[in-house]
Image (cartoon, rainbow, N blue to C red; front, side, top):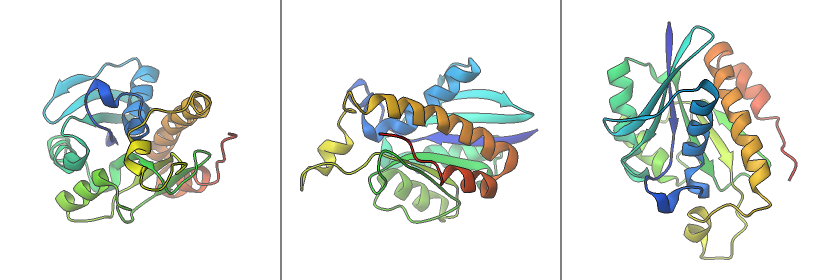
Length: 192
């Protein structure tokens, strides 16, 4: 059975729950809810396991804080013997509007501390990632407040819709591969 490591990036702690920076955790939670599985606290991460069409999905939410996410990713890749091609990191992205998702097989960290940590620990940027657009609607100098801020009430319906779509994208990635999944995911536009 093929194994996949699905990594939702975020920060632990109630103060970060529901913030833009924690959308990776929210997508991981949506996956666990869909498959009726629960997270357990384990080494460097909260971990849930699910089966989808003959694939085993190991879903993690690193408990290391964002800037040390790479440690958790490496540990779980090694423990579960999962190749880099079968890892998918779900992350917030300021450069994309809330209407967009972007899937890539590799790429820069774009200043994101979670991706930076993963790249440093794995010594490569050649791993799949799904970027969840959060927009950049903040005054100059207020980026941190925006990223660590909660979604506006009028954004919540599209955030929920996108999170559910991300679960389908993960399933597609695990069954038909990144190229075909990318072609579909990168065309999506969510009504704001």
